[in-house]
Image 1 (spheres, rainbow, N blue to C red):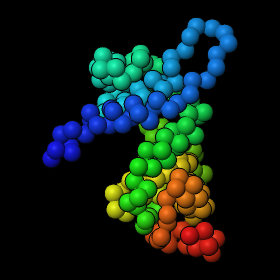
Image 2: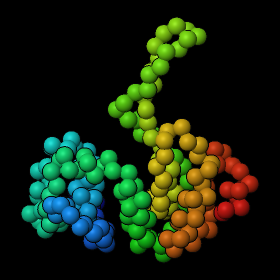
Image 3: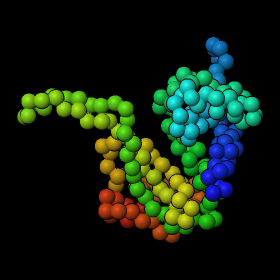
Image 4: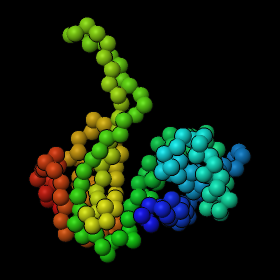
Length: 200
């Protein structure tokens, strides 16, 4: 009960510590940009809060008042950064860094993937049945999880149609590179291959 009651304030403080390590890229021309750490902080808190961009504005302003961000980003700025593919590797690094305090606890891990539906659809005409078809687009998140605390030690986002097995070696390697001592890794049959067994 206490953990859930204090979750939001704890996440805000931990996220601030993670974002403090983000280096601002150099800028030669134009108006000064929003600090990258504030943009990442705002984007992450928007997703964590599960509210729309406009509704999360109040929460971001409260974070600015509390000194957690220098400038709270406008909702359109949050959307712009969330759509920027160059932030993918940075967010992956933040996931890896957030798990490091649990290096001494986690020894056994599990790998799996899950899909997230997007609000868009792919449409095509099915000539065999003579009708329009559509399917919802989705993305897939492949993750390595510690089995004691359920911490995600590393994650890789891909298109929804990407197979699970080829991502496994990357998950093992990144978890090991973070400093974890992997004693055992569990996974379902989607990951069964000689290369994956050898990686463990």
